[in-house]
Image (cartoon, rainbow, N blue to C red; front, top):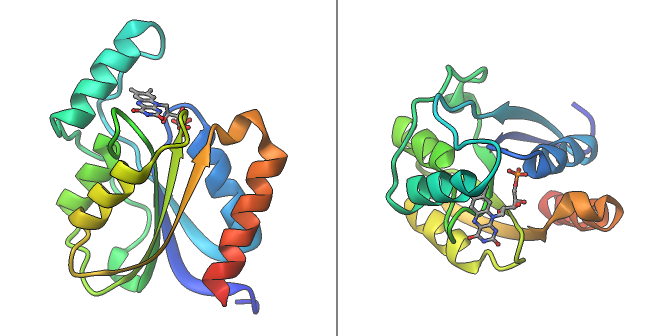
Length: 164
Ligand SMILES: Cc1cc2nc3c(=O)[nH]c(=O)nc-3n(C[C@H](O)[C@H](O)[C@H](O)COP(=O)(O)O)c2cc1C
């Protein structure tokens, strides 16, 4: 591994590509592994049903089953966990990951992607769900795909903070 490497796994969920973009950027700045969560249930792609079903599942913690992970969680001591904000909280796929994997005693970095730019509540809930770990730093991005260059700069700064 190069000098820009941390022994870390980035675990993320993306429904509409923003967090996928964030993950690809992080991967370009840090030598880490990526684990994209694949749930068996997702909201409809279009229309009001997207927000109703997605928001409902997030608010009421209706957790999906996840496809088998590609990486062995116990191989890593640092994690980046990234999620869209749904109805003010983290996505059910992330909830399912935390249900299935008892994460304890790890260094953790959180990344939120939202339309409003307000991810404070989601980050607090995620920190709460990660009790027993050391949440070192967080990053909140607003609609990163709308201005990929600005988002890329913020992600690069965050990655450098993580390294130092
Ligand atoms: C079901 C659903 C609920 C959402 N709820 C919120 C919300 O409460 N607050 C917010 O700022 N954005 C909300 N959004 C917007 C997403 O957080 C935002 O578009 C995010 O960047 C999407 O990431 P993705 O493209 O990786 O799926 C919601 C989007 C969906 C689909």
